[in-house]
Image (cartoon, rainbow, N blue to C red; front, top):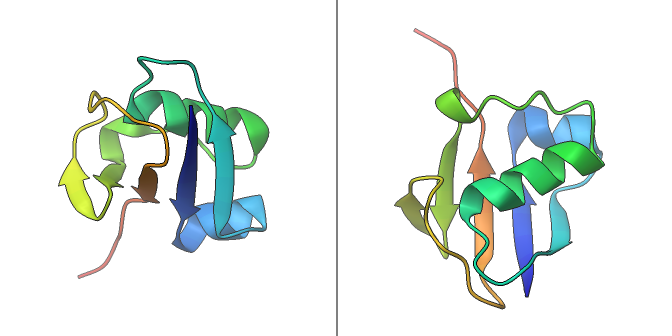
Length: 81
């Protein structure tokens, strides 16, 4: 299946792009898409415990299953006061 992964903030800067097309096997999850992006862009530090995900604009956990044509947003941790 093919999904579009959207990158924001520090992840976008580390990858040098705001989106990435990932070809993933059937049964893949949001975490699998995240791992694929981290593998393709080593400057992105994988930290799934502090990263939020959205699937087709709805917040989900990393174990959410993907379908062909989905859009995944990887939302890095935000610091601030």
